[in-house]
Length: 260
Image (cartoon, rainbow, N blue to C red):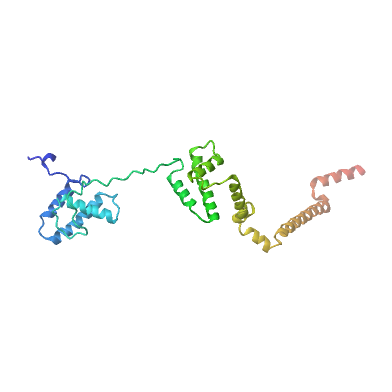
């Protein structure tokens, strides 16, 4: 009995597909008909996708799987595939080095994006638009500052840091913030508007039907009248039939005997 050891086998190119898939790829090379090789190559590609269920259906992934098939066949597979044969050595090619971000961040709890927003707000020409952008950046910085330091959130400190990050070109004050808050209250008053949003049809129904409030009063008066009628009926019934109670009949007999 002959034993087959892994050390005697050919090199396993891609371990995620296994030995059997590589043997099938090597078998495709030995077929003489190009049409048959192409048909069986498509079947093998579907099998490779099933062995890797996490593979997504997109153009880059499909090309990568076809490249894997060519690598397992030692780049000797001649088929009519949807992609060209990959270059030799591209399987273990190192990716390009990602450039490290060398930008210096003044306040790391604000981040680089806040600085970019400040740079764009500084160049705005419209004063109203620049003021609105500055207040928006201030509120954003205040949220980041509260996340970084939950114990003490001072608006004056954030205003100074905003002025520092803008190079003195954005100089907000507490008065500007109060004026913006007053404008927001005038544009979106609380209370009545909130009730209208919660009950949009209630006020309209009362305006269209002014007798709705009087109906309850009439009903209440009618109930009072009915209760009086019920009381009068009870009194009349009790007075009109004094002998209906058996105790009253016995008391009347005793009284008549004493009179005799």
